[in-house]
Structures are given as structure tokens and as C-alpha cells.
Length: 280
Image 1: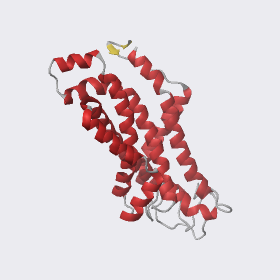
Image 2 (image 1 turned 135 degrees about the horizontal axis):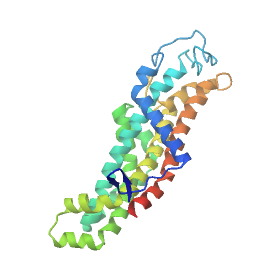
Image 3 (image 1 turned 30 degrees about the horizontal axis):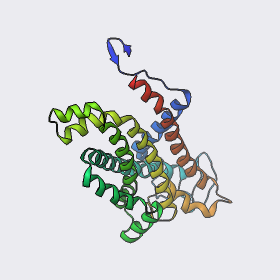
Image 4 (image 1 turned 90 degrees about the vertical axis):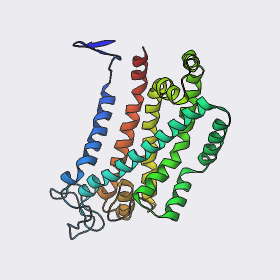
């Protein structure tokens, strides 16, 4: 146990240079998503250049797109959609999946069987195909995108949480809790959840990466955030035809996607050490 002044800390905080850089990158994109309207020099749909696919310059640091709109402004404002939609979807998916997984592990019997078979059937549908069908049929809007992405990744979160909860559910302190007459809500919230939080947080980060990539893929196919608004995947799609003579308009949104997803993965790689230290 580490002491800071008179305050005991239940874990030893360790982070290497790679983890620190990854954390700073994630923090940077989070701040951009929060303050994008204040940071962007132009509106997201404002045409500011008479020439399309304009080069990088002092006035337009990342060039302009196929309509003469400032790419820096569109990337900054598009961060709100990429990060916001992905966070909302992963939060909904993991909350639902983890809750159902723990409930199935504790209840067992028909509850476990029915939930597992239903979510296994849902998980068997290819994620991109499911997203294409739903968004193409219902229409593309931010609530639809969030719900679709959440439904796609709920089964995986459920299976992961259930596997962890089943192992914890066989331990002696769970038997003691049942002998005291504790109900299912208490066992789930006070006994099982605290013992699986570390792996669950790692799983949340991994699913966030998957959701960012799937959202970008849907946007690249024209089924994501609709014009004049755009997320990073939509920015790549709408400028792909200008790659030979307007490469910055395609490269910088791609670099933004890569920097966020790689940083989250690198941060996840540092979690096991922290989890071991916390349990020591």
C-alpha cells in the first residue's frame, strides 16, 4: 500500500512513457470533443475557399475539402460525433451486457439459458451487415447509430461479463452471502461487480475501439453522420476522390482515427499491471 501524506492508496500507481503518451492523446481528443466549437476557426459547413482541395497554408493549416471547406474545422467539429457517439454506444452496450451477464451467472437455470441463446443468436449476425441493414432501413440519425452500435456489441460484453461472474459466483464469500440471506441485487452489486471491474474496464476500452472503427466504416459507406455534419469516417469518404491531388483531406481524418484507436489500445496494454498491483 502506498502512502501520500496521511492518505493510504490501495494500489501502486505505475505508468510508462508509452502509457503516458497514450493517455495524453486520449485526453487531447476528449478536450477537443468538448471544446470543438470554441477551437474551430470556421463552421463545419462553411465554404471558405474558392478552390477545392486547397493545399495546406497559414490560413488553412490542413487544407480544404472537395467543396472548399476548412479541413481543420471539420476534423475538430467531427471529433464530437466520433467520440460522442462511440462513448454513448460503448457505455450503453457495456452497461447492458455486464448487468445481464452478472444476472445470468447468479440466477442460472432458464434465465441463463434464454439470455445466452438469444444473445448468441444476435452475436452470430455479422456486425457490419447488421449495421447496414438497420441504418439503411430505419434511416441514419445519431440516436439510431448509438442504439445500433450498442445492440451490436452488447452480446460480446454479456459473454465476457458472464464468464467472469460465473467464476466469482463459485467462491466461498458468495456462499456466505447467500447463507446470510442476501438477495440477487446485493450479490451482484456488492460481491461480484467489485471483483470483475478491472477486466470489465479493459473490455470497455477494447469495445470502444471496435465501435469507433465500425462507426467510421458505416460513415465511409454513407450511412453514418449525415452532411453537412460529419465524423472522421465521413470525412475520409467524401474526400476520397481527391486523394491524388488533395491528399491532406483524406490523410488527416485517417490519422485522427488511427491516433485515437491506437492510443486506447496502448492504454489498455498498461491495465494488467495496474490490476495486479491493485489486487496485491
